[in-house]
Length: 393
Image 1 (cartoon, rainbow, N blue to C red):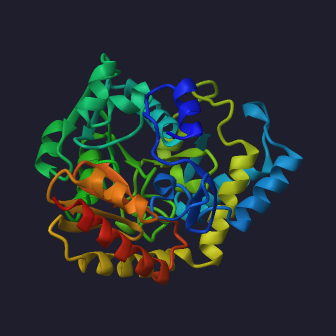
Image 2: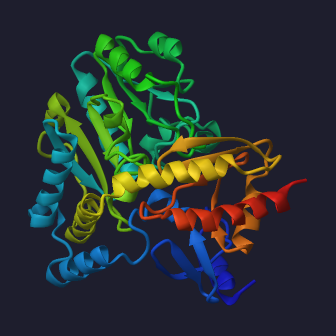
């Protein structure tokens, strides 16, 4: 163990265990650990560092804003927050109202409270979610997370919640009815292993919600802000949700979440119904504005599509008995493995200077910065191939 490991173990709660790496600094898609070793980062802080590490636009925006005003609480307005909300509404191109939080879990908590208000008049209290989904670790967000191992230690949780298999339209139709306040769904299962649904599934969710009078909540915490080559994955499917939740890549590394209420859903809250002391603070909003501006000005949505296809092609070419399938879209891909080899592959890749994520025992997730180049893909894939070879039984 290193000296930092010992210090971590002495003071940190054990919810994460001891991380296998201690990072010191980064630049672009590369990071360096405290021993000075360089890594190519295809994890991106779990789909967060959308512009990579130490991007000049974020550095400049945060530096300027923290020198002017770092915090106001919700007792005052500020220009970065209003401007960011306006930008998000413009990107969605629908009548929308915005609530800012600090994380994806908090954005989903906001959405669940909106569902309660929506269902109150008719006594609707049920939420329908999907098996293998992930919506956060707070008690409300956890209650709609479709992973029993994560939920059960903290029962009883808010409810009622009904779970159906992701992509199973018939099961969803059977579950959603007069008791349903909302359906919450990811466009693609993120923590579930970057698993896309059958074609047309989001449109079916919209149709089922409309028939039942339920809100459609789309959790775009991981899929939103360019990850799939579109501002919003649901937008690319031609679907209009009632509520969209965002976080991760929105702040480019600064903590921020957002809950977008479309149309009537945006009018559900009255003063005092919800709040956050730190949510949408000026510094995080300034960072998010830099992210949105850079994605637009540098045509990064096109880059995500082009480089994402190149990445998929190179991954498809991996000749490894451990790889069963390659799935995902844009710069959000997963290797589906033939067995529970993901932890060994992640560790072997790290020793070669490549960071990937064992998102499931049998799946490796790649969620690199949106600035990734084809040359960096060509550098990374042989390292991943070598790691797969080492991890082969």
